[in-house]
Length: 469
Image (cartoon, rainbow, N blue to C red; front, top):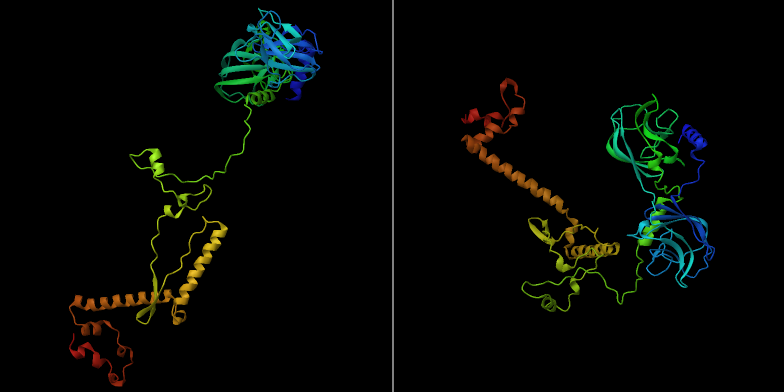
């Protein structure tokens, strides 16, 4: 809250708003001072809540509790025991002038009871009480007018929930004004001397657009509805009233006090009540035997009962058991992997030995100890295979080398077949095709003087000389 708002709050207080006594609700009177120093003043906060101001009790009673009843005078017969201000169900502790807020049990209201007492169960003694009138007009929320104004300002009837809380349902505002604020002040008409009210998020920024939204506003500091005469939407920059309502004193004079006025934190009270409602956990006992969680389930056959199916199971089915925290299933649940093809080593034109290759497996699902054990087993298998292999195997090239050679030989064979098929396509003999398409060394030699070529040159293989053209 800004310094201007604080100054305006102080001005309202000096004008007489804060000079009055603090408001705690409808005054029911003081507790009778009978035993163990019980005293305090009791107020009706709403239909289900009582407030004791400056409550005293020495805590020496053996079993003292808060009680309410419907009889003419305090008596445990037919009365109802209440929980304390913290939601506890035990005997009352010592109180030294503390504010105490007490809620009635479910189904009870102040209309149903005639007295409130501090009662001792063990000796059936009343330590102090206060009477509750039959015609009690306990505090309750009040409805006031609805907002109507410019810039689309509108709402349903505003509800004064308590002395510091306003509930506005279906509130609308177009959000076009530069500096619109929620505004309160003394008197019936808004003026620049009013006080800005934080929005539903506790911020004093200019109002955004609202479209039939329900919001809850809280008056700042110790300001209450008894200190103001109007509420509305006000443009602080241009001092323009966008719409307001009056708060008649007669309509808001009997609203409940806020929890803040009673010195109660809603969060702490809710936590205390929730703790009181929470059931007490039962003490746990040690199991008679340790039961390991397994995934074993009996295989039930169709047409047989459960008992018969269980008796049909083999006695020893431990192989099907598996702990729930073990990721390795039993062998009976695994599908055999297809065997890897063996690889053979060539020696000349024959295979001299058959060796099964070692494949790298995925060990991520195994524990570190299991991974080391599995790697040792593979290394032993690999060493044993090499001991059975011929001595000259390790002196020969690797399998990849022979594989590349086989591929090259296959490519050469395919080229040879293609070479033999092409002459048939042109309907010429292999000799004619070779003469026409193969390069000749003689054509690359220089001619001798006189145009003669060396012996064994082109004249011997020239197709024109041999009549192949």
